[in-house]
Length: 222
Image 1 (cartoon, rainbow, N blue to C red):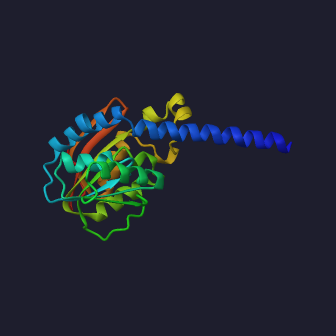
Image 2 (image 1 turned 90 degrees about the vertical axis):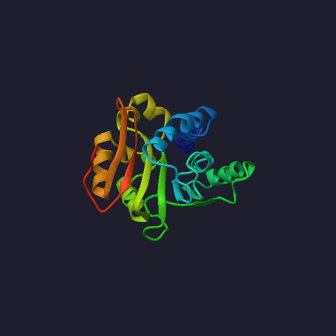
Protein backbone atom coordinates (compact mmCIF):
# COMPACT_ATOMS: atom_id res chain seq x y z
CA UNK A 1 0.00 0.00 0.00
CA UNK A 2 2.77 2.43 0.93
CA UNK A 3 4.68 1.71 -2.30
CA UNK A 4 1.53 2.28 -4.36
CA UNK A 5 0.95 5.64 -2.65
CA UNK A 6 4.57 6.69 -3.29
CA UNK A 7 4.29 5.75 -6.97
CA UNK A 8 1.03 7.69 -7.26
CA UNK A 9 2.63 10.75 -5.61
CA UNK A 10 5.63 10.48 -7.93
CA UNK A 11 3.49 10.36 -11.10
CA UNK A 12 1.29 13.26 -9.96
CA UNK A 13 4.38 15.38 -9.25
CA UNK A 14 5.78 14.58 -12.71
CA UNK A 15 2.50 15.54 -14.40
CA UNK A 16 2.28 18.82 -12.47
CA UNK A 17 5.90 19.65 -13.28
CA UNK A 18 5.30 19.08 -16.99
CA UNK A 19 2.18 21.28 -16.91
CA UNK A 20 4.06 24.09 -15.16
CA UNK A 21 7.00 23.79 -17.55
CA UNK A 22 4.68 23.92 -20.57
CA UNK A 23 2.92 26.99 -19.19
CA UNK A 24 6.25 28.72 -18.62
CA UNK A 25 7.42 27.80 -22.12
CA UNK A 26 4.27 29.15 -23.77
CA UNK A 27 4.78 32.50 -22.02
CA UNK A 28 8.58 32.58 -22.48
CA UNK A 29 9.60 31.71 -26.02
CA UNK A 30 10.64 33.63 -29.17
CA UNK A 31 7.23 33.30 -30.85
CA UNK A 32 5.46 34.70 -27.79
CA UNK A 33 8.01 37.53 -27.69
CA UNK A 34 7.30 38.38 -31.34
CA UNK A 35 3.51 38.36 -30.77
CA UNK A 36 3.89 40.47 -27.64
CA UNK A 37 5.98 43.05 -29.47
CA UNK A 38 4.42 43.22 -32.94
CA UNK A 39 0.74 42.73 -32.12
CA UNK A 40 -0.07 43.18 -28.44
CA UNK A 41 2.21 46.14 -27.71
CA UNK A 42 1.42 47.82 -31.04
CA UNK A 43 -2.30 47.69 -30.26
CA UNK A 44 -1.70 49.05 -26.76
CA UNK A 45 0.47 51.87 -28.07
CA UNK A 46 -2.14 52.95 -30.61
CA UNK A 47 -4.83 52.92 -27.90
CA UNK A 48 -2.77 54.97 -25.43
CA UNK A 49 0.20 57.23 -26.15
CA UNK A 50 4.00 57.37 -25.83
CA UNK A 51 5.03 57.24 -22.20
CA UNK A 52 8.17 59.35 -22.04
CA UNK A 53 9.10 60.04 -18.40
CA UNK A 54 6.46 57.55 -17.19
CA UNK A 55 7.01 55.34 -14.16
CA UNK A 56 5.45 52.00 -15.10
CA UNK A 57 4.57 48.80 -13.25
CA UNK A 58 4.47 45.39 -14.90
CA UNK A 59 2.45 42.60 -13.27
CA UNK A 60 4.13 39.23 -13.76
CA UNK A 61 7.40 40.00 -15.54
CA UNK A 62 8.27 36.46 -16.66
CA UNK A 63 11.71 36.43 -18.25
CA UNK A 64 11.78 40.19 -18.76
CA UNK A 65 10.44 40.72 -22.29
CA UNK A 66 7.63 42.98 -21.11
CA UNK A 67 10.01 45.37 -19.36
CA UNK A 68 12.07 45.66 -22.54
CA UNK A 69 8.93 46.33 -24.59
CA UNK A 70 7.67 48.98 -22.15
CA UNK A 71 10.99 50.83 -22.33
CA UNK A 72 11.76 50.27 -26.02
CA UNK A 73 8.32 50.82 -27.56
CA UNK A 74 6.57 53.07 -25.04
CA UNK A 75 9.62 55.06 -23.96
CA UNK A 76 9.06 54.60 -20.22
CA UNK A 77 11.56 56.32 -17.95
CA UNK A 78 11.58 53.42 -15.50
CA UNK A 79 9.87 50.05 -15.08
CA UNK A 80 9.20 48.28 -11.81
CA UNK A 81 8.29 44.66 -12.48
CA UNK A 82 7.50 41.70 -10.27
CA UNK A 83 6.66 38.02 -10.45
CA UNK A 84 5.38 35.55 -7.86
CA UNK A 85 8.06 33.07 -9.02
CA UNK A 86 11.63 33.84 -7.91
CA UNK A 87 13.07 31.71 -10.73
CA UNK A 88 11.42 34.08 -13.22
CA UNK A 89 12.96 37.06 -11.44
CA UNK A 90 16.39 35.48 -11.88
CA UNK A 91 15.70 34.95 -15.58
CA UNK A 92 14.46 38.51 -15.98
CA UNK A 93 17.57 39.92 -14.29
CA UNK A 94 19.79 38.09 -16.78
CA UNK A 95 17.59 39.12 -19.70
CA UNK A 96 17.56 42.85 -18.91
CA UNK A 97 21.27 42.81 -17.94
CA UNK A 98 22.23 41.42 -21.37
CA UNK A 99 20.32 44.32 -22.93
CA UNK A 100 21.89 46.95 -20.65
CA UNK A 101 18.54 47.81 -19.07
CA UNK A 102 19.25 47.14 -15.40
CA UNK A 103 19.56 50.86 -14.73
CA UNK A 104 15.96 51.33 -15.90
CA UNK A 105 14.35 48.17 -14.48
CA UNK A 106 13.71 47.10 -10.88
CA UNK A 107 12.64 43.50 -10.23
CA UNK A 108 11.23 41.81 -7.14
CA UNK A 109 9.02 38.94 -5.96
CA UNK A 110 5.50 40.21 -5.39
CA UNK A 111 1.78 39.45 -5.22
CA UNK A 112 -0.72 41.06 -7.59
CA UNK A 113 -3.48 40.83 -4.97
CA UNK A 114 -1.46 42.90 -2.47
CA UNK A 115 0.75 45.46 -4.20
CA UNK A 116 3.40 46.92 -1.91
CA UNK A 117 3.12 50.50 -3.14
CA UNK A 118 1.41 53.62 -1.91
CA UNK A 119 -1.64 55.05 -3.66
CA UNK A 120 -1.18 57.06 -6.88
CA UNK A 121 2.37 55.84 -7.57
CA UNK A 122 2.42 54.79 -11.24
CA UNK A 123 1.64 56.49 -14.54
CA UNK A 124 0.82 53.15 -16.20
CA UNK A 125 0.41 49.48 -15.27
CA UNK A 126 0.92 46.64 -17.78
CA UNK A 127 -0.56 43.13 -17.71
CA UNK A 128 0.77 40.83 -20.42
CA UNK A 129 -1.41 37.75 -19.84
CA UNK A 130 -0.93 37.33 -16.09
CA UNK A 131 -4.19 38.00 -14.24
CA UNK A 132 -5.78 34.69 -15.26
CA UNK A 133 -3.15 33.06 -13.01
CA UNK A 134 -4.34 35.11 -10.01
CA UNK A 135 -6.94 33.53 -7.73
CA UNK A 136 -8.61 36.82 -6.78
CA UNK A 137 -8.11 38.74 -10.02
CA UNK A 138 -10.85 41.23 -9.08
CA UNK A 139 -8.82 42.20 -6.00
CA UNK A 140 -5.79 42.57 -8.26
CA UNK A 141 -7.69 44.99 -10.52
CA UNK A 142 -8.63 47.09 -7.50
CA UNK A 143 -4.97 47.13 -6.46
CA UNK A 144 -3.98 48.29 -9.94
CA UNK A 145 -6.49 51.12 -9.70
CA UNK A 146 -5.21 52.06 -6.24
CA UNK A 147 -1.56 52.40 -7.27
CA UNK A 148 -2.33 54.24 -10.53
CA UNK A 149 -2.25 58.01 -10.65
CA UNK A 150 -5.39 59.82 -11.76
CA UNK A 151 -5.62 59.56 -15.55
CA UNK A 152 -3.10 56.72 -15.51
CA UNK A 153 -3.30 53.83 -17.97
CA UNK A 154 -3.97 50.15 -17.34
CA UNK A 155 -2.90 48.19 -20.43
CA UNK A 156 -3.92 44.54 -20.50
CA UNK A 157 -3.97 41.39 -22.59
CA UNK A 158 -5.54 38.15 -21.34
CA UNK A 159 -6.81 34.78 -22.56
CA UNK A 160 -10.42 34.21 -21.55
CA UNK A 161 -12.49 31.46 -19.98
CA UNK A 162 -13.92 29.81 -23.14
CA UNK A 163 -10.47 28.85 -24.46
CA UNK A 164 -8.91 28.06 -21.07
CA UNK A 165 -11.87 25.84 -20.12
CA UNK A 166 -11.42 23.47 -23.05
CA UNK A 167 -10.65 19.94 -21.75
CA UNK A 168 -7.36 19.67 -23.64
CA UNK A 169 -6.15 23.08 -22.42
CA UNK A 170 -7.13 22.24 -18.84
CA UNK A 171 -5.24 18.96 -19.09
CA UNK A 172 -2.08 20.59 -20.47
CA UNK A 173 -1.99 23.86 -18.54
CA UNK A 174 -2.30 24.66 -14.86
CA UNK A 175 -4.73 27.57 -14.48
CA UNK A 176 -6.85 28.03 -11.35
CA UNK A 177 -10.59 27.93 -12.04
CA UNK A 178 -11.01 31.00 -9.82
CA UNK A 179 -8.77 32.98 -12.16
CA UNK A 180 -10.83 32.37 -15.30
CA UNK A 181 -13.15 35.06 -16.67
CA UNK A 182 -15.14 35.93 -19.76
CA UNK A 183 -14.73 39.19 -21.65
CA UNK A 184 -17.95 40.54 -20.12
CA UNK A 185 -16.89 39.56 -16.60
CA UNK A 186 -13.56 41.34 -17.05
CA UNK A 187 -15.24 44.48 -18.38
CA UNK A 188 -17.65 44.49 -15.44
CA UNK A 189 -14.78 44.07 -12.98
CA UNK A 190 -12.94 46.98 -14.60
CA UNK A 191 -15.98 49.16 -14.09
CA UNK A 192 -16.34 48.04 -10.48
CA UNK A 193 -12.67 48.81 -9.85
CA UNK A 194 -13.15 52.35 -11.17
CA UNK A 195 -11.79 52.22 -14.73
CA UNK A 196 -13.13 53.76 -17.90
CA UNK A 197 -12.32 51.77 -21.03
CA UNK A 198 -10.41 53.70 -23.64
CA UNK A 199 -10.21 50.68 -25.96
CA UNK A 200 -11.32 47.04 -25.84
CA UNK A 201 -10.96 44.18 -28.31
CA UNK A 202 -11.94 40.52 -28.07
CA UNK A 203 -11.48 37.54 -30.39
CA UNK A 204 -14.16 34.83 -30.29
CA UNK A 205 -13.70 33.86 -26.67
CA UNK A 206 -9.94 33.37 -27.10
CA UNK A 207 -8.44 36.56 -25.75
CA UNK A 208 -9.13 40.15 -24.82
CA UNK A 209 -6.91 43.21 -24.86
CA UNK A 210 -7.50 46.82 -24.10
CA UNK A 211 -6.57 50.02 -22.31
CA UNK A 212 -8.31 51.25 -19.21
CA UNK A 213 -8.19 54.81 -17.93
CA UNK A 214 -7.97 55.57 -14.21
CA UNK A 215 -10.40 58.37 -13.38
CA UNK A 216 -12.92 59.16 -10.69
CA UNK A 217 -15.65 58.14 -13.15
CA UNK A 218 -16.94 54.60 -12.58
CA UNK A 219 -18.84 54.07 -15.83
CA UNK A 220 -17.56 52.24 -18.89
CA UNK A 221 -17.59 53.56 -22.43
CA UNK A 222 -16.88 51.71 -25.62
